[in-house]
View 1 (cartoon, one colour):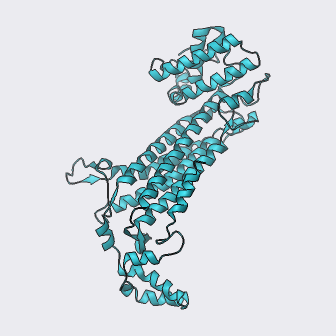
View 2 (cartoon, one colour):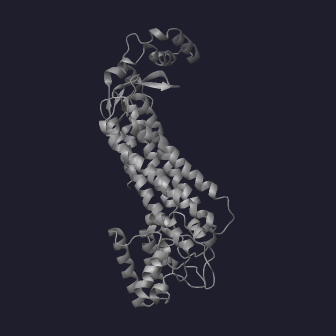
View 3 (tube, helix red, strand yellow):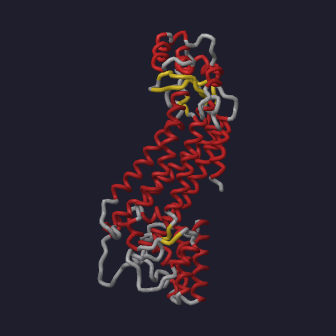
Length: 431
């Protein structure tokens, strides 16, 4: 390992203790490394603005930071156990290339605000991706909902209840993912605060140009209080996890539907072959493993959020416990986004089995229509309800799924799905 940033003369270190302290930190820092470099460039510019580094040193440092980023992307520079973390790797590289100029890069900055700003930039990037995935899923659902509606049993308590349609099913998930996209966008605006320049949580005796770094890094505002910068660590991460969990909750329920609909007992849906796998022992089986793992993925995201929350039983100021939040954040966010990325193609290519769905519409599923019609004609609803219940098996006489759906004129229902309203909401996200 290279010299530790905090190493002092006469202080010994223990290899086992250092290994425990380091954990997977340097490996996890690979995910945040390019953002750390970006923030370092902005910090160097800010130092130059207040005269801490010269114009020549600024030029050299920014050039070498760009070269380091290029080398990292190309695999010429590997962030590994030779370094305590990504921050020390950057300083070691700059010192090796530029001597004293490299040693100045950390002036006025702590590893605390260094990881805060790198993580914050990473979170903004991932929220933009979350919004994109949710918008794409919603768009596919709206496209499928606009196709000719097929009859589909609607369920409550997993029992056949009323006539529904494929258009209504897709519209329901479209609206859900439009809301999820909005939540991602709003969360991104909420966390869009620059912590760089707050140092270890109490500021420094330098007039750091925080306004410049805020603008240079594309933040919407400066996070003013150094103490709150530390208090927000974990809090902002949980907000991102909550936005992701919202989308994953809808993905889980969608996956549950497909898990049921693809069984032989339902047989409403056929999946593309790529989304199924074979059994290791039963030659006859094709299993909907992708759908099942999509269903399970909510647990991974929720567990990551829970782990971060449990780490936050802390007083104010930085505590080393927070190091462990990095792995939870990385694992939960990357897994959740990977799961959501699969949904658009799956939803676009799944096929409904119309004849089987139509055959599953039972006469009693028209009983609600009968009761509502009687109520509309003046019969007190509870009286109409009892009469329809007694004659439920005859409720379907002279009725079809199409007639039931066309009579469903309440906003959002079968004859008034209002896809145009949902499309407007989705398009408004771009404005």
